[in-house]
Length: 617
Ligand code: ADP
Image (cartoon, rainbow, N blue to C red):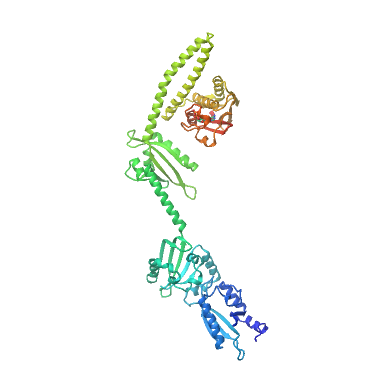
C-alpha cells in the first residue's frame, strides 16, 4: 500500500517542474494525485480540472485518443513495464501541440499494479510548423491572437492538399456547426461531408498548393445548418522555407447583410427606373466640384441634347432668362436649409423665344463628411402640355369672369338706382328686397373677382402698386365696412394704433376682407371676430380670430392651396370655391410676408399674416 498522504511523496511531486499525475488503475481509471505543474497545464489548455477520473480531460481528448490512453494504462499495469504514448490534445484557446505521456507502474512486490505514475511533456507538433511558431508566440502576440479569436471573422488553417484542419477559431466552428474535436486533425472532406456539394470550390482551394496564388471568393453562398447566407472568403497560401505551400490560411467574413442590402438597393433602383420610364421622367446630377451636369437618356431627350454631359454654365444658358433667378434661388435656398426643392421653370431651346418647354425639377444636395455639398441630384419632367392646359384653363376662367363682370356691374348700377328711388317712398317691402339683392350681388361680384384674381395670378399679370400707409387705418375701415354687411357678428379691432407698411393697399385690403369674410362664414351668428395688430422685430402681424367651427390639424397645411376646401358636414352647406385663401397667400408672398393659421377644431381659428414694416423695404 502506498501512502498518498506521505509528505515525502507530496514534496517529490511539488519538486517536479514536469506535470505529473498518479492514476489508480481499478475499479476505474482515477487520478488520485497531481502536481501544480499539471494543474497549470490543464488550465492553460482550456480544460477543467473537475473530476478525478478519466473524464478529467474530456474536452481535450477525442474519444479515440481517450480509448488509446485507457489501453496503454491497462498494458502498463498488466506488463508491469514502462510505456510512453503521444497524443494530440485539442486546446480550446491555443494551437495544438502533442503530449508525450510516460507511464510508470508503481511496483509493490508481486501484487497487481494498483497505481501508475504518469509524467507529461508538451511538445510542439513540428519544429518548422506554423503551430510551433504560434506556440512560441510571446504573451503580447498571444493577446493579439485572442483578439483575432474574438474578431467577427471565421478563421482556420488547412494543412496539405487533404485540407486537414489544424486550427479553427470559434467563429468558423460556429459556421461549420462543429466542435473542435470533430474537425481538428481531420481532412475537411471527412469532417464536413456537406462540402461534397461544393466540389468546384474545393478543387480551386486545393489548386493553391500547386499555383501558390491567393484566392478570394466574393459573395460565396453557403447553406449550413446554422446559417444561410453570403460570405467573402480569403484563401492565403502559407509557405515553408523552400517556398512550398504547406498550408492555407482561410478567413471568412459573413457579408449576408451587405449582399441583401445590395440586392434590395438594386431592386429599388429597378423599380425607380420603371417608375421613371413610365412617367417619362429624366434624372440629372450636378458635380459641384467639376461643375459638370450629367443627364440620363430621358433628361437628354427633354433638353434635346446630344451629349449626356455639359457644363453648369451651358446648362444655365438653356433656361429662359426670366426663370434663371427663380431656379437658382430655389436651389440655393434648399442647399441652405438642407432640404429638397421642387421648381417649375421654362427652358428655351432654340435661342430667344422660338421653342419653349415647361419643366418641373425636384432634387436635393448630398454632403460630404465635412458638411460641404458635393453634388445635387434630381429628376426632371416635361410639363409643357400640362402647363399649356393650365394656361388655357386660366385664360378661360379669366375671360368668363371678365365677361360676367360687365353685366353684373350694370345690374348693380340698376339696383342702386332702384334703391335710391324707393328710399323716398314708404315701400318697405321693396326696399328690403333690394337690400338683399344688393348683398347677393356683392357676394357674386366678390366671387368673380376671386376667379379673375386667380387667372391674373397664374399668368403672372398681378402687379403690386405699393405705397406707404397705416395698416391699422385700413383694418379699421375694413372692419367698419364688414360691420355693415355682416351685422350678424361682433367685429373688434385691438392693438397698435399705427403700423406703417409699404404695400399694395387695395390688395392687402382684399386679404383682410377675405379673412374677416371667412371668419364670419365659418362661425355662428352673434359670435366675436377679433382683429389684432402687433409689431415685432421688423414685421407687423395681423391676426383675425373667430369662435367658429375650427379646422382639423391635418387640413391646416393645405388651406392655402388653390381650390382647397375642407370637406365636412359643417362646410358642405357653406358656399365657396377654395380660392380666397390661395389668393391671400399669393398676395402676401409677393409682399415678402407670411401667412398661416392656427386652429382648435370645434373651438375656433386664428388666421395670421405678417408684412415687413416700411423701414425694412
Ligand atoms: P372658400 O371659403 O371659398 O371655400 P377659402 O380659400 O377662403 O375658400 O378657404 C379654404 C377653406 O378653408 C374653406 O373651404 C374652409 O374649409 C377653410 N376655412 C377658411 N377660413 C376658415 C375659418 N375661419 N374657420 C374654419 N375654416 C375656414
